[in-house]
Length: 237
Image (cartoon, rainbow, N blue to C red):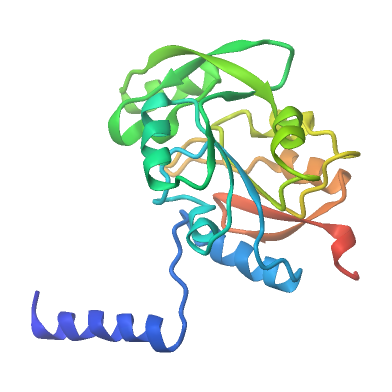
């Protein structure tokens, strides 16, 4: 590293310290946006439900809150990742399950290897798309399922302030399974694009925003990859 690059890195570090700049752990800064939103809502220590945690820190929408002393529930079907998450985030409740959208008690989980672990999904159709586009295969595991309403009833009173949802293809189905009459999280962040980043062919899933508007949420922010929804009744429009 040359001297100029070293001095620039030192300068950025000083900015973080003295200007109170915030580091993001999310894929595209979603945690910083959500943190700002909770500041507007006067919620200092939000609880969270993260569905599809995968990595405990990197590209994670809730680690920034965990680091500040918040706690919540992380859902991860891959047992190998669950062990890693439990080591890194001992205050959180980590559940080695999937979120069920029917009465089915177990489902096939299509697990991709190594650095492609984040592609893993309960959707065979999505798994086949990833396999076809990348040439990378997957293994199949049987994973127990629990409904999102059961999780919220058991672990939150009355519901989590923040839901982060990234399940590779079944996000809309899980959103539709929520009992909105009983559970009204203030903020929901959900992946809203199809798989396609290998050749920049991803498309926006407009049906998610349409459904959330119908349930009383509005699009607070969008990073192309994810959309952050907030309850409309919390703002004076």
